[in-house]
Length: 448
Image 1 (cartoon, rainbow, N blue to C red):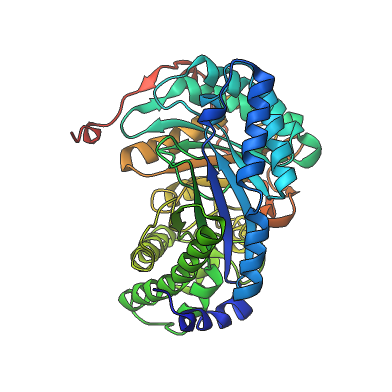
Image 2 (cartoon, helix red, strand yellow):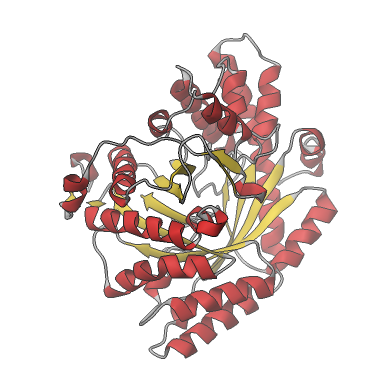
């Protein structure tokens, strides 16, 4: 039972500390929409989404008004499209984009393929279409899972994703490669993630489900201001207690949306997701612990403490926690990360080290436009290896900015923010990427 009094305790967090529900995401199973006739399949997809999600945005707005809790995004995730497309997936992509516009959501995720062990013909068709689709659609997000702890790393898919990211950047060069901001490459992708660009409704999910993502970096930062100079035991306990309060609000919103829409409650994702607004930064939580900038020596340890304490506090506050759940470190979407990168405190290599202990991976990183496809594939392979060996979700959302070099700035706008273009290691890896095949799963994957 969630008492009204608990919500009243959060009013200060909402009014003064940038607390919000980052998203209500409705997962929709589209397996029953598959059809050999492409046009009929696209029509079924459009009709099912419009029917199932008709009241999603309105319900979110009602809850915002009644409880005074900001709900920033209303989103949809669907079955990976490669699982339902029996031919060219582009008509389905266009139907998804039209449906997202019709129901009024911010984004729709699931133009996706799961290729950690190999590729079907449908996977191959979807991958080939990604640059065109992301350059033509407005609301659609895409993801590809190229590795898992159980299967290893599909290096053929890794090689191809480097080329796809480059082509997507070229086709959206007039918006600084914005198409790449809607494309993420995963290892160990989860089926109930409510956050974009990687959300999809996995094969193990129900017919439909309400998943909620909470966010409160500003709340955690303010809480830590009251324990300056205290030992890390006190820091961890303070974060745990704060994460509990944040997650309880997410649980309330998820349950309320579920009841009003008559759709099962799925999970609360208790991630700390930043925005470019000052006072809403994960990096500033780390500096509050005593670092001059995110990226200074000690940053990985500080992030490990933060991520673990958020999970420990949040998991007691909701009966179903899932998604990614932890701390996000997207460079362009976090004012503290932007400042650290601009000051030279934060390098791509340091970010990679940080991804060993955070929720996801290398996220929203702008790199020079002349970065080769092989270099991008190498970055993906490194990040996938971290996920595979550590049995955790990792990802890469990297944006080659055509015509720009290290030190320039790119502007994406809104929640996607802006970022300095970061330098990359220029030493070659073509022969490594050209090998293809699969990097085998680690020995600890054999747990049966």
